[in-house]
Image (tube, rainbow, N blue to C red; front, top):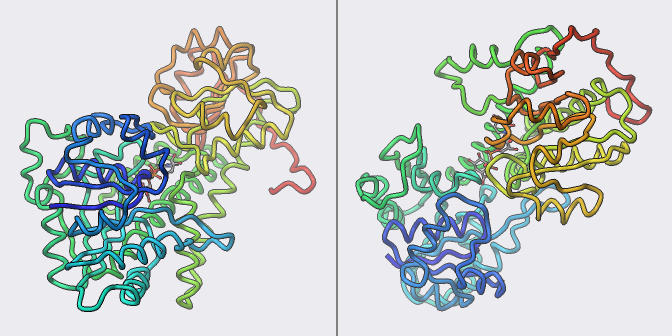
Length: 471
Ligand code: UGA
């Protein structure tokens, strides 16, 4: 099939490359000429496994890049809209890009087309897109508007797209649903997975994935409700971790105990410094705004957001209780990225923590395997960017682990110890076993577990809350 994907951000670029890998002819449209030129030169703008391979495989043949939206619409039977929906200052999703793309698409409709929302949008967006197109479409031209939410995660975007837990198609007519089933046919019937050149199957992938057909409105809600539920799981376990700390229980054991209930499941129960990224914070606020508009006060979401913010404050208190005063302390910090496996720092809890620690007067040497450049733009010269974990740790009063990069979980502990001025590790992602850290000579603090140390630690003194600071 001939498909157009509007927007070459995370979702658009990955979707375009993956649709090409499924055998479709794809035009990815963007109005950013620099980005298009870079993509045409073979550059890959985001750090994402398998994306370079797919772009290399299909660029110039099944995958083309263009700034001509109208021509792409005329050439395609299905147009996926994957443009940004940033938050407004009130937390709602700003849909002005979606509206302007819908208007441009409408003028170019010259035969039956399906316009598909791929960006995360609030419920009712499909109705609005339909209205906008109706106002501008040439007479007698037929079209449908559908919602096909994307559930990929950054860092594993390509495999998430090709090996999804489910494919959701929100279509309000049978004709539209049939065409969209066709787009995903090789995933839903499993033929893609038989190909020798298929992108390798990740662990736990269920193939073929179920394809769920719903109304457009239900599909829009499925996306927001999924992200809100996942964020709730994280805030829930972070709240449980705080109780574990108070009573001396081990959150890892608690997670194992509750995660083995098949109704709950073990995934997304990792406590830490709170969730971040370009999706959860934005989508929770947008979903809360949608609920408010519908007359429902979704206070559960307020609490999920509050616990998430509180988690960072708790971590700062933990640093303070490990080091006492912070002014002038030298800290090695691992991972400005918002999570492991990505160079994205948007809404990164690690960046927010680094900024708070800088305000407290700490000196910071940071290391991230991929996010240096982006982090540097935000943190400027206030932070020294180290060459390696060990360089960040050199002569530091403590090492802070803020991101769950796999390579941070397999450090050479004797070497780390020899680099640090004091062998103190404050781990916001629970990457290490407290006992092993103590055996290796570290005083080790983590989330929802007792601290450990080669010598027994004196009882923790919660530093007094400073005036004006949140308790
Ligand atoms: C998230 C969803 O997981 C995807 O399904 C969704 O498609 C995507 O948003 C989106 O809406 O586009 P992503 O933002 O890439 O994906 O990252 P996640 O892997 O979900 O992690 C989000 C944050 O939660 C990170 O800061 C991560 O460190 C944190 N997290 C995650 C935890 O603190 N604990 C966990 O157990 C899991």
